Length: 307
Image (cartoon, rainbow, N blue to C red; front, side, top):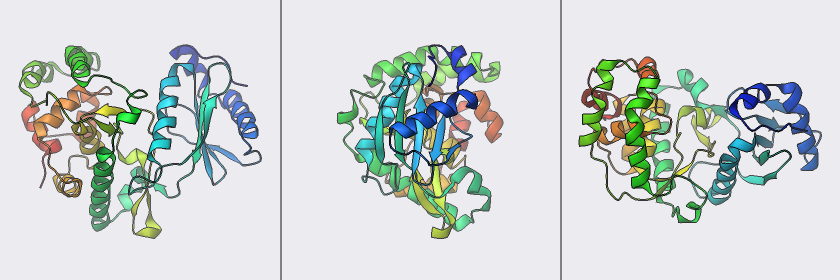
């Protein structure tokens, strides 16, 4: 069985310990009727995730992550069969022991887009960008109100106000140099943030690490996974992860994606949401993408401009 986890420190000691996690996962699989399948833990993920044979995936959430478990459960059930790219089908979900929750879902087949990317030809990359744009457009076109009770952040203007109030301290804590820090207040003060944006279902981490592709099918997308950080809010917010981690500051690929999506986005708006994102870490993005820009306005064009 799995031990009680109530703090981040307890989680750090338990979540990575397979001597603790695997017996609990195996016992749960037996309870759910999928006993006998080989469990293979995925290396990625903030919580333990196991492939259960070839047909299922089991995700385990300690008590502090109960909200994320409920979000994944609700979103997977809501999305099944509704997007042009497959999403996992919900098989079972609920409480386990000591505050733990679980989500058992179907396993999507293919290869992670992130490790596959270096081997994908340019033409196929452009098709993937188109597929991503179509998938995002379909996601954002859904009526998200049935999920509003289960997903953050509630009132979008209040969420933005909270994020704006903490934006400078958040980036300073992450080690952003002063030359960048001093630009943030004025940039956010003049950013074109909509007062009453559309309320859409947001993945919030639409990136190569959460996309699956199949070389046998011309490198087309065969899966979109990981919905526990989903939110309801402005569709533009979803384009932060797209520009940084899917098209990775490639204006041609982002242009293809947004053409398929059906509308452009103002680069300064996406840069503002980059600073306001709940996972915002500008120093990390700068290290990853190594831009030539030295102002936030120029950075907006370099990361979110299109060709």
